[in-house]
Image (cartoon, rainbow, N blue to C red; front, side):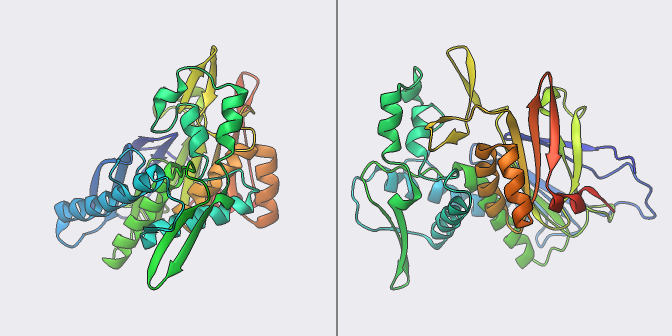
Amino acid sequence: MNLTFSSFLKIGVLSLVVALSGCQFESAPKNVIKVGGKTMGTFYTITVVGDYPGGQDQLKNDAEQILGVINKEISIFDKSSILSKFNDSKSTEPFEITKDMADIISTSINVGYDVEGVMDVTVGPLVNLWGFGNKKDLAKKEPTPEEINEAKKYVGADKIHVTYSYGKYFLKKDHPDVFIDLATVGEGFGADKLSQLLDKKGIKNYMVAIAGAIRTRGSNARGTDWVIAIEDPANEQRVGESIEVPVCTKGKAISTAGSYRNFIESNGKRKSHAIDPFKGEPIDHDTVSVTVIGPTALWTDALDTGLLVWGADKALKYANENGIAIYTIVKDGNGFKSRYSRAMQEYLICK
């Protein structure tokens, strides 16, 4: 089947295309409602096939309300957010958080343990040190080994604890300088919450995207699979001309962690935003992106980060051992090479 790609979403570290045309169909496209806007320092889009109660304006309002709450909970750029207040506090006493925050952090910790700690939400001190967090003034020059080792003292999921007591959720840190950064999973969680909204409204066919985190259900306007295409980073500037592979989500979540768009220049070299918490430095291998398909965008968003830090070889070994669908792109000489796990094969066949 030859696919053409009718609309392009350039979001976050991943360029995505939604394929809605290029095949022969017996029926005309159904009515579609689309809304979008800015959130979490990036963009979101919602596509609903059919109607939404209250129409487009109500969908926009409902989505903005949900995303606004999430930002007020986990943004590290909003000093009034719950997470910012926790990070700024020097207390090591239990700090009350919301159930959603408890879910995000607990899931992230569990995924981190699964990938041997290479995905770590406490990597914030290192993220800030290298200039990717909310304290960019710290990265006027490349950190010294001494500065890196000092920051690493406060990194590790074993240094934070989520507890539940008398109907409330609490977060505790073992050291005053522990700093949690949920940017790597916030987009996935947001996509899940918007998906939950649409499910509650009885919407059977939709796609939700926040940067590189996507949730789909049912079929697109043509009555076929939602198709997400991963852009080849070799030609990232030529929008829509450099499609690596179409992926049919089949009602699952899909997200990508990539290292070829978000970077800083240091000593004449590109430094990826993906930090290895054990080395305390940006990754330096040739894997440039890892795409994961799974049950929730929070889970895929957490896992793709760890797998990117690992690199394609170890990521694929882990995915094949655990039946997880992943797709990797690796720098190979002057070009790029793609490899995927066995579980990914079913998503490469679209109806």
